[in-house]
Length: 103
Image (cartoon, rainbow, N blue to C red; front, side, top):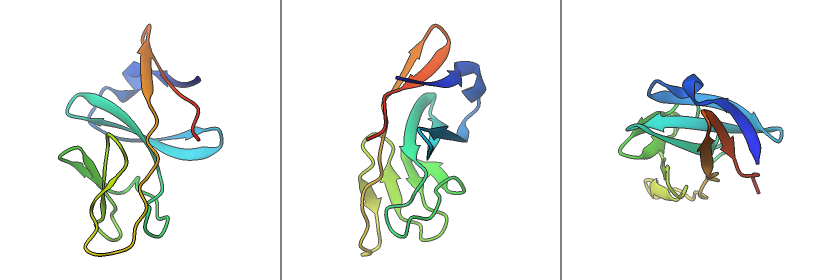
């Protein structure tokens, strides 16, 4: 497991960039839940950190393609070829947020 940081760092709804094993990920607080997804659109690899979060999906700011926060699957792709994104399980213990090792 990898330590991400104190849960209090993620009190507000929003997108929080983090590095895990040298890879860019996002911790997202949405509807009072925390998610962790890779910061790379499955379409052209653009960062998702500038995207918007709505209805349990993150939308790429460049092409509007959305990815499910639960499983990383492509939800709205407007007919474009697109791979799903990685999702990492988060674990909260004693006020600290941890994640499993990215694969």
